[in-house]
Image (cartoon, rainbow, N blue to C red; front, side, top):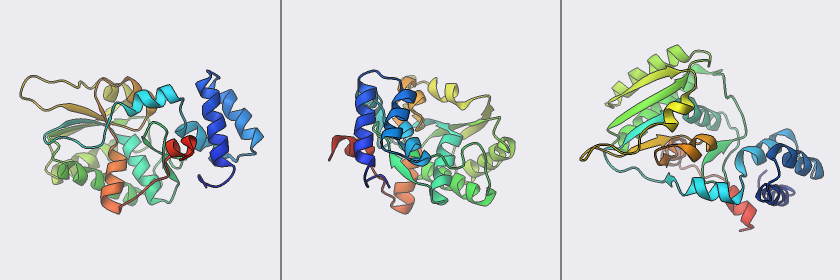
Length: 233
């Protein structure tokens, strides 16, 4: 889908409009109508293509590996729904900022609790494999079932031998965004695990794309790179 006509040309046109300061909604409609793009493809453009300056600013904050003993604030549903959508066969891709995204899928609801728990276990086990010293996981309380999800995640962190906590919040975004990068001398560095551009752009800590890391490590997954698409490489 992403590499077949007319997507690459549409992506470059959309990026050009963003770079010139045009609003994203108007730019998306103009490009989408010009190339007769369907709803899913328009979603990919909107979620995956950012202006060159914004893409570079976020990409410069991403780390691809964690140091041993890292402390992590995890945007729980952001990570877990990405894993869930991969398991359900929804298209995933790397945005122009280098973060993993999907084309929509099941955000806001969990239709298969078994697969969701598998995804949560995979994330917890990967954090343990990475030598994370402490993980704070934040879940959006308005999501249906968030209370039971939090309880399950606490059990999975304990099973993986991870120190940490799982909290419900009206919105996980500010909790992850405000997680401190620096600690007292001798303590581990902090990171924010999210693929949300708005959070990644303003977070106090460096960004670690946990969902991408889990999928690459567990399944050997590889994803279309919209940065390469808009560069024509």
